[in-house]
Image 1 (cartoon, rainbow, N blue to C red):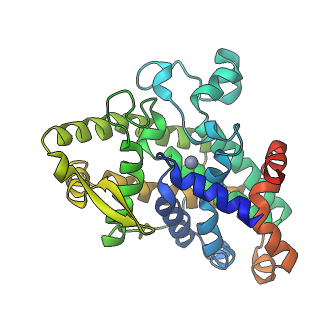
Image 2: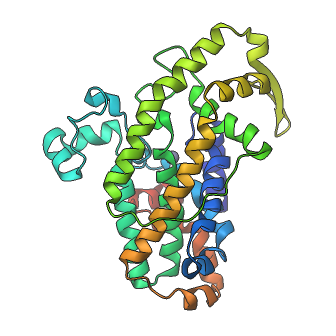
Length: 322
Ligand SMILES: [Zn+2]
């Protein structure tokens, strides 16, 4: 099983466009924990490393299960122009208007967040520790994706405008280089979200509105920057790889006025607020007994395989055993 996970991980690393990258997703889930009220913090703090490490499980699944991919994005420009009023925000109405196949072809991230909220709420109602952790980690991933501008654009990797690589540049290279140098992750408290679907659509529309800027700023900076300044070589895992230079990355971030940090901060707030909302909607169950509970060895083991055997996609099991 470990070998399979490693294989998935390696495949993932080889792909050019990841959501937020490992760094971003881990930071988002990790820092969201500190926004929670004490009644939740006592459980989430015990498992903060797990929640952070498993923030990328949906991406690992993405390359093994074809149904997974549409859950991470929405090509909203497919539906006309901002604010894309032709697209019903409610899933059933959207299916009636466009058909499920067509919606899946262009991405469904806002509805995936809604679905995960429902599951997390149920897990809280049942006080099922493993499902609480799994769904918390995973809703954190999808919410994170919804905050990335290029996850709400059909030109998601600049492939239509000669800017291939911009996806990973914005969401991985920028935060990985600049995050450790001083991103501010102190963000107040989680809030109750009375209308979760409306809330996540607002974030998606913000992402869609920012996508043009993400692309056009890189374009104009590239035109005025020589390639030997734009790119540099860095060592990763013992190999020299061509990479956007630190110089160009910083210039880009300045021109975007710290957009990646702002979106990441908002994603952290959103993740904590969805966790909190699920807990409130479940009737604010007392989590003390769960926080005190030690996981058995078999539970620990099944944690590692949760992405395989509880992912709602039976075909994944077949693939994993091959
Ligand atoms: Zn993703």
